[in-house]
Structure formats: C-alpha cells, structure tokens
Figure 1 (tube, rainbow over the protein chains, first blue to last red):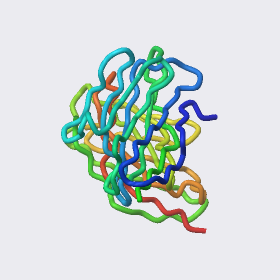
Figure 2: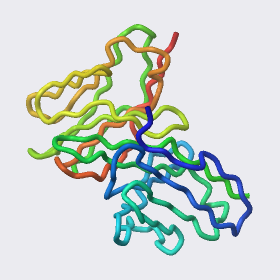
Figure 3: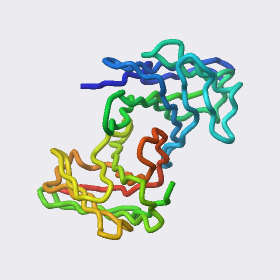
Length: 117
Length: 110
C-alpha cells in the first residue's frame, strides 16, 4: 500500500488564490521530504527539499516566497502556492525516504494536479 | 551526478521481455544506478537499483556492464500495466536527491 500520501489529488481554483498541498509519510518519520513539479509532457523537476524543523532548501529558479514549504512534524510537509496564477498550473508531487540501514528508495505520493483558472 | 542517456520511446509486445537501455558513460565509482517508472498521472515508483553487480527483484532485473558505462533494465514478461515512462538515474550512494531526465516511454502492446 501507499507509504506517502498527498492531499488533495486535484485542485481547481481562481487566479490569486493560495493553495496548500499536504504530503504525509504514513508509517515512518521523514526528516526530509522533496517537492517536485511536472508540466505536461515534461519530466519531474525538483523544486525544493523540505527539512523538518528548519528552512527548506530551494532549487535554483524556484521562488521561495511563492512556494512556501512547512515541515512542522516528522510525518507532514506542506507546500503552499501563494497567489497562484495560470502559469502555476502543474502536477505537484512529493517524496520521502523511509529511514533505515542500507538503501531505502524514495516513495512518492500520487501527486496533486493544480489548475488555476 | 553523472548524466544518463535513454531512448525516447520503445514498444514491446505483451508477454515478451522489455529491455530498456541506459547510457551513463561518465559514472563514477561511488555512484549507483537507480530505475524508477511513472505511470500516467501518478507519482514515480521505485523499481530497482545497483552499483556494479547485476540485481534482480520481483519487478525486474538490472544488468550493469563491467565498465559500468551502461545498464539495461529488463522486465521479463511485460504486461499492459507496465506501460509507463522509465527513468534511469545515477546518483551518489547516500544521496537522497533524485534528478529526473526525460526517460523512456515504454508502450506495451496487446
């Protein structure tokens, strides 16, 4: 079953609205989570690394004031798209890695499709 | 992290083996090869990973050449549900950050 849950799965809203997306690790604690964005027919682009208890690390070209990330607990990270505009319409996906010895793969949520009218 | 090169698309008949190649000629000694796939409108799914030895799990096999400059992901008996974009990613061991390229769009045909 799923180990990373994202909510909501789909959002349609008006331009200027702020939208919050939640990413939860279901049966493990994740000190680090990742947020990706995927435009149609393109690959996933890493936006930022969410760090529990500290500031997120943003990739080059990603506006930190536009995409607010909060990782207040070990099982929840949120991405808020502030004052969203049509160009922010995209598929947003989060991931987390289960802690443990040896290699643990990244588990991805099922994504949130954001449509700004 | 080393760059990877994959064919843009491939087709495979249902029930046959699907062999997906990946070129990573600049891979360094401490970099692993990971494979993920993304079925349409879903998040990526981990398939397999390896360093230098061939690996097999319930989903697939990974064959890495002796010089580690290329690898092949093998789905032994492809089904329609294996239709997806397959990503070959090379990163350092212990690194959590995945950088996705364009991948190979595999279409399994009935």
